Image (cartoon, rainbow, N blue to C red; front, top):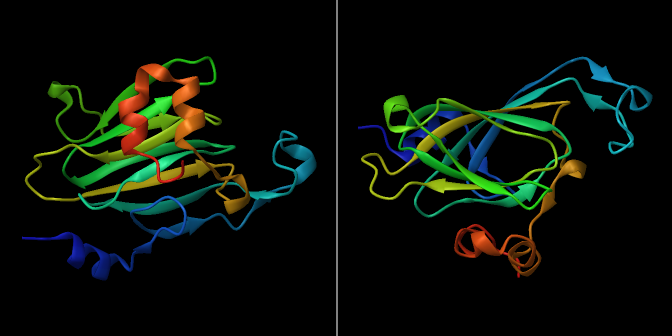
Length: 171
């Protein structure tokens, strides 16, 4: 049976330096968008699009963070993933990424630009890992990554305190 260690090896994944989990960039467009064609929040040119593999295990999670760009997640293999999304208007929702559409899981999910996001495996899965893909447009740049802090997020989203606590490393 395929396990997380073997997936890391086969796909050449590395620990994500900011977010947690394992990743590998598999696509970065050769074309870029000039800074003056992008919204002012970017401040510099960006690739048109980027894509990564992203692996979660029971020992890892995607910490709460937000990006300047839209991000589309694609579920590939493994156990379902629970993704928390917190919008600027104070609302939030949980999106289930996975193969069982009849049970409310989705094979694809969108995180709009500026929405706080974090994710982890649903407990009790048969595999002990989930392999996702993530596509970002305009393309991902580490300058666009903002980590979430537990105290600030729980103050802004008190209804999600427990979920935020499980998806943050920074106080």
